[in-house]
Structure formats: C-alpha cells, structure tokens
Amino acid sequence: MKGLRNVKRKVIIADDNRYVNDAVRDVFVEHNFTVVQTFDGIQTIESFAKTKPDIVFLDYRMPAKDGLDVLREIKSRDPDVPVVVITGEGSEDVAVKAMKAGADDYITKPFAVSTVIGLAEKLIKEHDLRLENIRLKEKVDAYKDYLAAITETIGEAVITTDSSGKIRFMNTMAKELLGAEKEWKGMHINDLVCVAKRDVFNDIQEAFADGKTRFEREYILGSDDGSSLYVLITASLHRREEYAGDVFIVIRDLTDIEDMRRQMVNAEKMAALGKVVEGVAHEIRNSLTSLGGFSRRLERMLEPGSHQKLYVDLIIEDVRRLEAMIRDIESYVNYTKIHKPRFIAIDIAKVINDALSRTFSSRRFEGIETRLMLPEKEVLIKADPYYLVEAFWNIFINACEAMPSGGTLEIGVKRNTSSITVDVKDTGHGIPKDDISDVFNPFYTTKASGAGLGLTKVYMIIEEHGGDITIDSKVGRGTRVRVHLPLKDE
Image 1 (cartoon, one colour):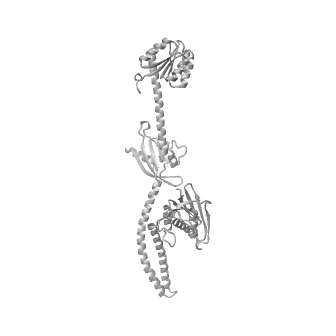
Image 2 (tube, one colour; image 1 turned 90 degrees about the vertical axis):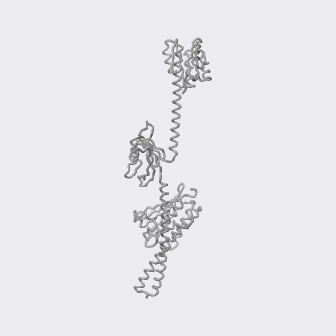
Image 3 (spheres, one colour; image 1 turned 30 degrees about the vertical axis):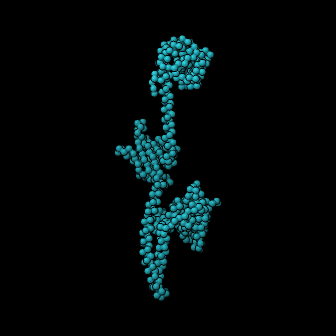
C-alpha cells in the first residue's frame, strides 16, 4: 500500500465558520490533500455524494441541517468513510452522541489546526487497512470456495486429519465411498478406512517418520456387508506452519480398474488354456478314433450276453462320453478363437423365451414348474441374440439338472436406471459354499459327464455383453444366478 503523502487524498471540511474552515483548508492543502469546503448541512451532503471524499471533518452545529443528521446521512451512504465531528469546548455529551451516531472521532474547539493532519492520516490509514483486510478476506473466502469446488468435483475421496488421525474434513465423495455417518468430524480415520490386520494411519505415519514426504499404497477395504473395495491411498503432510502435523489424504477407488485387471488376466489365462486344450483334444480324438473303432469291431465278434461283450460295451460307453466331452472342448475352443458377435437391439423377453423354448424342447424336464416374471413393456438391450440365448440356455439347463426330482424354475427380469437384472432361481440341491468361487472355472463340474465348460462360456458371453454374473446358493435350498446387463442406450 502506498504512503499517504504520495497519494492525493480528498477531504471535506464542513464548518459554517469561514475563518476555521479556511485555516483547516490551508493545512490540508500544504499536505497534498484535495479540499472541498462546505458551509451548511445540505451543501455537505450534496458535496459528499459528488466527490466521495476519503475523510470528512464535520462541525456539530451547521445551518440548514444539523451536524448529527448530516453524519447519519453520510454513514447511511458509506458506513466506512471516516468522519470527525467538531464540537465546542465542554461538549462531551455532544461528542458521545456523535460517536453513537457513527462518528469515528471528534475534536473540540479551539484546537491546533496542525493536529487535524495527524488525526486524518491515522483514520485514513485505519480505513485503508480495514478495506484491505476485507478485500483479502473476500479473496481468501473465494479461494476456499474454489478449493472446495475442486474437492467436490475431482471424483476422488479427499480427507484431512490432524496429527493423531482425527478427521477434520471430508468431501462428498469420501462420505459416499466410505459410508460416513453424519457425525464424522472428530472420528479417527481408521474407523472409516478398515483394513484387516493393518493400521492405515500408522502406515502413513511410519512413512513420514522415515523422511518420506509422500505416501502411496493400495489396500483392500472391508465393509459391514462383507464386500471389498480396492483403493489407492495417497497421503502428504500439510506444509503450512499453522497446520503442522496435519495429513492430507486422497483415496481413489480402484475397484473398476481391479475388475478390468482381473478380466485381462482371465482373458490371457483363457487364451493360453485354449491353445493347450486344442492340442490335447486333437491328440485325444486321434486315440479315441482308434479305441472306438476297434472296440466296435470287437463288439461284433463277441457273443451277446458274454462277459467279454459286457466289458467291451463299457469301453464303448466311455468312448462315447469322452467323444462328447471332446466335442464340448472343441466347441469352446472354436468360440474363443473364431466367434464374432453381432450386436443388435433386442427385447430381453425374446432372449429369455427363446432360451426357455430350447431348454424345454424335449420331455427331459417335465417335472419342473416354470414361473416367468417379465416386464409388461419392451426392454431393449444391445446383444448378440445367438450367444446370449446360448448363455441363458446353459443357465437354465444347469438349474433344471439341479432338480432331478422336479422343482420350480423362477425367472424374473427387473429394469434399473441404466441396466437390467435377470434372476434365475431354482429349488435344487444347491452348491457348497466352498465350490461357488470355482463354478466359472474351465473343467470344473460335479456332473458325471461333460467337460465343465458351460458356465465358463456363460461367464465370457455375459462379460462380452458388458454385464456381470453372480451366484448365491445354499445346499438343500437352491441356487440363484443373477445377471446384470446394460440397457441399449447405455
């Protein structure tokens, strides 16, 4: 801020005594002030509106309009401008009234004219400092709003804690990601960021104790509902002295990235497995061709009902089972290698109905009751009808085979905001908890026949359609397969 003597200030001298008015004017002119002289109350108010002075010296007794009324009028127009009231000797009660009306100071007649300069410079400086503080506060507030807007829009959880780990601030994303309750302020960060057998805040403090200025580590956070959340936690220390020891923490949700990483690993695993399986299937088929051909020749040479005939029949049956398995494997390999899905808009109801028709095309599952709950209106998804029908057909077949003595197959479709949910429930024997994580793995099966590739192919088809599939089952109570698929617009 520039010195007062280098800036030409403006002052109004309002006094009906011309001698006093001129004397004060001369002193201010000598000190580089622009002086406006007024001699009654109305003239003072008009001049104030026109000139917008830096300070006003106002006589208590003025013609046309009383000095206190003029003071109130000036303060109503600009509450910040300094006003000094000039009173007569022994008029302390008037000075008190003036201060209550908004005066910044007062001087009593008679006074040394030179003293008004010191008083004016003091009041103007205080006024300038007050305005500067207001300006800086507004700037700080605007910057705080700016930073708050950034923390609310970056899409990542932002948390600040004190040196002991107690939370000072959380943005909206942090509250949503961590499920923070309303009274989160003052909670310890470890109460929200829960990691089995790990103290996250202690990890951060240990890193800083080793001289590091930045901490970064991936964690798997647990939740009350048993789900997991993959996150990247980054932390740094506040550098400002008044926040010494406080920690700035950013939590990035890596769940989608982790899912993509897992999908890539699965895809690579499936591709490698496909090559191995293709070679093994080829060699087995060659051996099965010889084994089946010679077994059938032996069958024709043996007497019906003989023990030798029985043994050969068992061999032929196993050959047929192995040939069916090889066909399944080759079908799976061909799918992974050469299939080219063609996506179109199709009603999910048509996909479900086509898969059901294929499932119950024979009398194999006559003892099973079907309950179908489809939306009344058309629900379009973007899909390859051939492959998606095959996926649901496999799901329905597995459900029906889990109910060899009959039961109920229930299929429900629910429309969500941007996706659909298809629930397939059966009342079959269920799947042991330890086996559920393996059901989508290649060659996993509990059946007496088959290669165990049906659900593996289902998993690949659903993922290829941008969806996901989960299984929930209880032994003796049945199984629910849940499929999520995006709507066409998404």
